[in-house]
Length: 481
Image 1 (cartoon, rainbow, N blue to C red):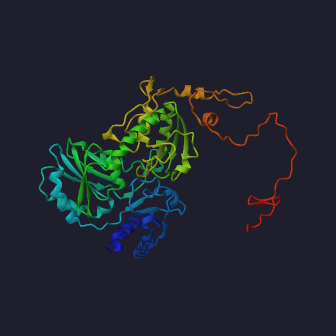
Image 2 (image 1 turned 90 degrees about the vertical axis):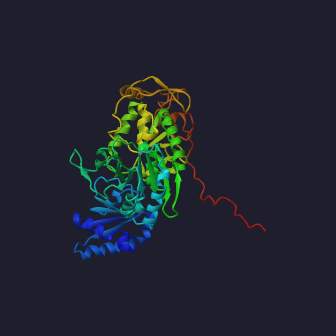
Image 3 (image 1 turned 60 degrees about the vertical axis):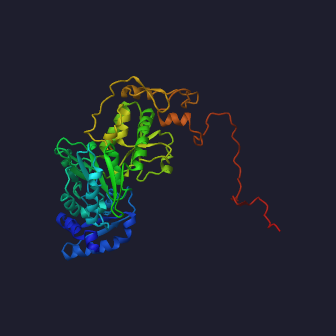
């Protein structure tokens, strides 16, 4: 496939020209950096030929996840817009317009659609009311061809081919008048029309009175795609068929990774209920609405009587989060596609905002209603209905789910101190803050001055000179013979 067609140079130039942008950032993931120079040269040449000269910057090694728009790095060059290449989350940024380009993957749409139409009657059982076809982002170039071929197939069951949300994302004005994205790829305005759905950068509409749990979901693309992972978690109660477009083979059932992870997510929700110290892990500064989600998480944790600490880390690693041993569970606020769902290597588990909302408010996670993001439409912020102790399935103890925020603040303002005016260690009291952890569990507490003790202070003397490999007062080491 020609470079200009594969990377959609004409569509990218039209986006820049129509918007009147002069400083353009081309964002590439690490595996596509080899083509960045050729794409940038072709893009610049096309803009100059159209009498619209631009200043182009290539963005690599994103500060945050490469699937989302890196506004932080783009603002360093005062960019007017961003053109994002490769797999993307399709989540809007806060301030910069973004255009998403999916490089085409080699595929035979005729053979692929013929394979699906031949096996579709077998995949649809008697209880399925519709079939929904999802194409990987790298195969979106063939969507019209595949949809047209499948439309000619004879089938009594409705077949819906999902499409991507608009690839041009503009920031919207919020109530305060500032430029901020009000919608995300999981909450698109058109998703509320009739029985329409919009999730993981895709949107589709079902027939009237049709639920997703009654549909057969057919995925065509990479089995390890992050988009498939999100869709299968969200609609885990539906029947899934995974089709490999290269080998023309199929697999019926949820991906093994999804099944295993769902069981662990339920356990982590129970573990978050028992946690007293919660870390809010902010891993994005560009996705619209992250400040509102952060504020709401702090309120929910406060109503549940938990202490919160906010940590801002672009790319979380086990070594970075190990610097906060007092935190019992982290709530990650980031782009949905960059959520760390498998946190076995971390000292403390990492959960999503939706799971935190269920844990802190006493709700339960239903398999057919799993969500990544926490939006205002999910649940209203309110105190739990009952303040009776609940039974923890993790450690078998009875714990109070919610406390009055005013009483919690008043209780934490008082502390037992010893004769040296330091916080005393009280056995049997739950650790509710980093200060409690410092006193009760932390082994190394720094080099204290130990003022007021009876230790005699000696005179200052000259120390040893040299390096650890050999000080000047040590005998010279002779070679052994």
